[in-house]
Amino acid sequence: MQRFKASLRTSIEAWLDAGCVCCQKRLMIAAHGICSDCNREIKRFAYCGSCGAELAFDTLHCGKCLTDPPPWQRLVTISHFQPPLSDLIHAFKFQRQFQLDRTLARLLLLAVKQAQRAHGLPLPEVLLPVPLHPLRQWQRGYNQAGLLAQQLSHWLNIPNDNRLLQRLRHTPPQRGLDSKQRRNNLKKAFVINPKISEIDYRSVAIIDDVITTGATMAELCRLLQKCGIQQIQVWSLCRT
Image 1 (cartoon, rainbow, N blue to C red):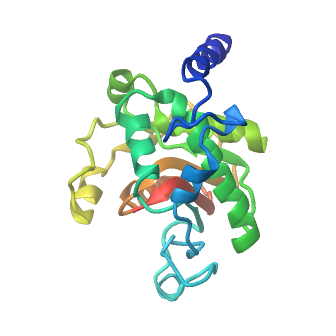
Image 2 (cartoon, one colour; image 1 turned 120 degrees about the vertical axis):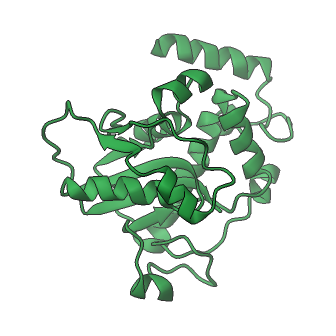
């Protein structure tokens, strides 16, 4: 299967003639996926290393987090949900353009490296992609968070555990719901895999494409904390 995926990826890149995924300009380094001009269009910003709020300068805790911390300890993100990053995420998630996984994962990798410099981010023991319900994964054909985690696992030499977290309920999409509706929508939606009897992780990073209200991450943090995991990071392509 891995050999088939690698062959398919090579064929797709050849078909695209190693062009930028945004503007189709020919790339000097095909593996980057995005040209330097389009990469600069992704507006990076200084942010709180705990909640992701935009700040004037990078810091580990903003004033809000000091009094009302999120259920996780660290957050890593690339940018806001705006073009060209939002266009790439939409195509990756809803238009079956799974070949964008490497380009998007590389952008997230660079954000992780920047967080190590700006926030002193320690790398976790394991990566945990946010799971899809089996029906939704069958409809989409893949789990976008799983593809991102797979790439990051390879580059960072960190295990990718896609079995620990499971989605039990097939919930309506979160899009269009307010924060309270999102929390209610996710109640008892996730479980820890009952086939895993012992969890030895002390620090984890949950991987997802977009963080909106943080309801999904909060629910997963609650499950992981019940298992004794206290050091939880959340990594996402963008924070809306």
